[in-house]
Length: 374
Image (cartoon, rainbow, N blue to C red; front, side, top):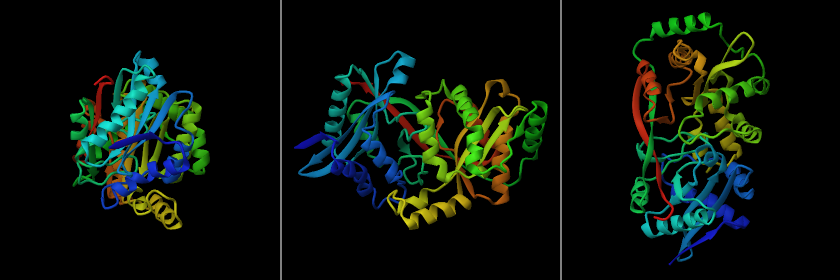
């Protein structure tokens, strides 16, 4: 007999956060989120003016066998005229009954609120962890990604879920020879378009504060039509900055600006801290903090988080500025490799850019969908 119940107490919150830590304890590829961030989210109930949420746990014979979060992203439904709920933070043992019990419960929650469709894994925004891993199970996850075992996909498919869309990911290493043409195109694009790379002599806090509005405006303009994206209000922006401030290194954060310091494009990369947080279970212990700060200063891997060029500068060579920056970084020895994180499978223009590197498509993630009546 499987019992599914809503997370309400402090004990429930700890169990919700710690279940995947136990499930993946001996898995070398799993990277946990920061424990404190997860605790803060659950203590708030996951609710805000743009979203409703529920957190559920499943037990069998008194032992936790799974968890899931249900989420109604109101902005997405308004934008698309839909009645869609999302699921995220789904983790489960290899047990079809446990998975069914969790999804039956979360779908009932959504149906009671008028939702006719369930989709995921998707979070509050496109900047959350998203997508179910369907290829690349023996590849290290980045800190920004969620790992899952190979049996997750078949569990969902048995429940009637079908593919909605896939993302692919690439590993980038330096090619045998530096592409000098790329450097020339980058330099010419800046000169011809009256652009420059923002000065990084400011403190990290001042640097981010100076360009934050331009960054989020550029992000919204360039990403608004992509799958699963929603606009970020000021509070959500502040929370994202707070979450990532510690791991930002100005050296890997490039703002491309016009003569008035308006952001025309950017390349946002993070030092790959996955290995630094694995052993601590996402807790910021003194040992983990030392490892994280050391990695931020001298990373082996760079996670390529976001790249955007405003429409008026696209097809004018400005993307070469970001690509050349990555190339220079790899040849300088500041990092050994880059991880692109998620590229929509149908975004061939983005994927075509990786041809300048020694590239390897090594992971694939999937968003699943079905009707809540199924």
